[in-house]
Structures are given as structure tokens and as C-alpha cells.
Image (cartoon, rainbow, N blue to C red; front, side, top):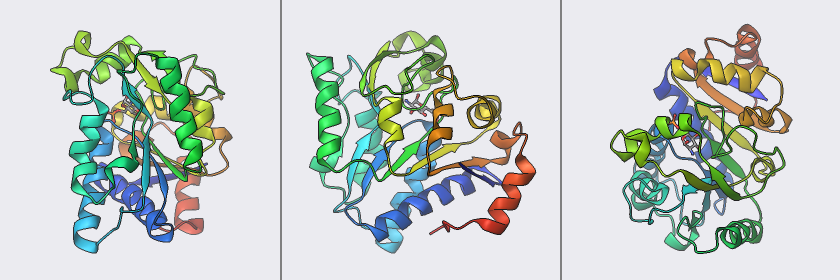
Length: 261
Ligand code: GLP
């Protein structure tokens, strides 16, 4: 795992977008795993700017989102499909039939979960998976006690997650759907490369548990410690509780090989 600490959220988002852009330029038919949440809005804004100003080409790229709420239609303003359409899909040249999210309105959610996994396999698997960090340590919607080998499936959301995501539902946690379909931790770990972005002081304690704590199903982001190619991009505020901060800085300054793109 490589920890990259940037001075502020904007610079952290910009580096994250540059890493994605670099992969996309190297492989135009990139299979890109996408995440939602407020933290990602700045990343998508940077990608849209790179598309407009530097012609970053998404026309051959396929995308697979981590998760979608159950029980609200794709056109609902709180759906992750709506989020993605607004922040990225409609603003770049992605082919609509190559943008994938689980269908949270499917009559048979088990069958939909299996279909999503099969679609991912047909596309050749995820080259680069973008990840945020939930306040309870989740990746995707893999809430505490999710099996670390889990696959795409239905999951009940914790009260903490529903509170965290309430701003998209008029501020009322009761309006946030209680369940979601999410890629499993095992699905995520099969991505060839993982890139987690976390910013802000409110993520500092959970980030330290995810990165430096034991690998545990109680903090599913900790499973990323098992991944052979995982980068974690954070701002100073989110990095504040990391014990190995000096070492991570030294590595970034002296041995950063991936390059910002
Ligand atoms: C939701 C998503 C997660 C994401 C999290 C972070 O819960 N399902 O994939 O990591 O939001 O949200 P934010 O960036 O708003 O803190």
C-alpha cells in the first residue's frame, strides 16, 4: 500500500484524477471502477476539465460503479445513476451503453447481482478501481462484518451510513434507502489496481484504522492492505492520525514511481 499525502482536498482530488487520466491514456479501452460520494465530486470535476481542456478521451472506456441504492428508480435525484450522469457521464464522451451500475429496482436482486458480476467478467475485469471511504470504514457499501471474500450482493446500510448520505435526500436519514446492491470486498480486491481517496478531518480516525489497523471485517477498507497494488491519496487533515506519516512522506518524496500522469 502506498500513502500519498497532499496539502488540501483539491490537490488530493487533482492527483487522483491525474492517475486515472494517465491510465486512460495508456489504455483507451480502460475498465474503470467508479465511486460516489461528496469526496469524488472534485475528482470528476478534474476529469471533466481534462476532457474539455486536454481532450482526455473516454470514448472507448467502460465504467462499473461500486453500488446503487435499492428501491429508488435510476431517475431519482438521490440515485447513484443520477449522481454519475450529473458529475461525469453527461459531461464527457463515455458511450452510454458502456456505463454500468447495478439495477436497484430489479425484481430479483440476487439475479441482478450475479448479472453484474458476469458483466464485469465479460468486460475483462476492472483495471483501476476508484474508492471512497465511508464514515464506518466501508468501501462500496460493504458495511461492517461484510465478508472479506464477498461478491456483489444486497446489503443493509448502517445508521451511520444513512446519516452520512442524508444530504442527498434532503438531510433526512430516514429518506435514505435502507438497502443497496454493492460489489463485494472480494470483487473489489480482484481489480488490478485500487485507488482510495479520503479527505477531511472527519475521516482521520477511520482512515488510520483502515490503513494501519488490523485487517478486519469491521472496517472493510482494511482489506485493501491485502491488495498488491493499492494507492491511498489523502489530504493533511485526513492523514492527521496516521502513525507512520513521516515514512509515508519520505517514500512519496523519494520513491514515488507511479508518477502523477
Ligand atoms: C457512499 C458510497 C461509498 C463512498 C462514501 C463516501 O457511502 N457508497 O462508496 O465511499 O459514500 O462518501 P463521502 O465522500 O460523501 O464521504
